[in-house]
Structures are given as structure tokens and as C-alpha cells.
Length: 110
Image (cartoon, rainbow, N blue to C red; front, top):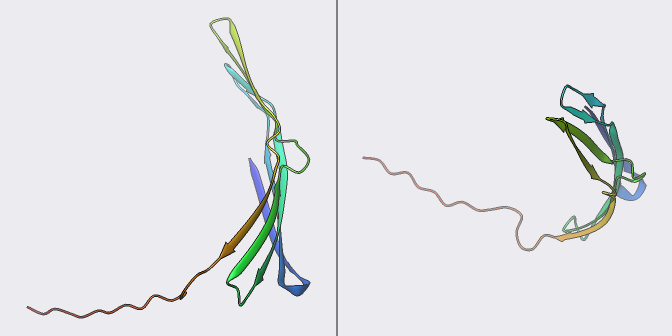
């Protein structure tokens, strides 16, 4: 398994994040799994003194994270297959109130 990620800060304080994931084929006595890989990325920008954050992200951009596994048990072949894990998300986050917490403390001595 290989997982690599990188984040860059672009002009206008836009953050660009790119992630790559790879899993090699896995053959064994009972289970065979094909290779899988995916490329995902996101753009993020903060507004209003960093209280509002907007992120647009896309997962499995090339639709290559196709899960395929075959198991052979007692002469029976079972195939598991899952496709199209692609999605696009828009996240909007706003911080309300104070970002620092005030603590009141006192010590008690016996």
C-alpha cells in the first residue's frame, strides 16, 4: 500500500490538496484481490477573519478505485465487486463565538 499527499498554498491564500492512494494486487491461497488506486483533491479558502471556510473536494477523480476480490473456499468461488466511489463535496464551516476558552481554576490545599 502506498499513500502520498501534498498541500500547497496558492495565491489569494487558497489551499490545494492532492492525495494519491495505491494498493497492489494481493494473491494468496484463498483470496485474490486486484490492484486499486485513486487520486483525490480539494480546494479550500477562508473568509471573514478565518471564521468561514469553504472547501470543494473530489474523491476518486478517475474512477479507478474499483474493489474486486475473489475468494475460493471448498470449491465455491465468491466474487466481491464495488464500483464508482467517486463523489464531489462542498463543505462550508463557520466558527461561532470565541475561539479561546477561558478557564477559572483554584487550588485546594489540605
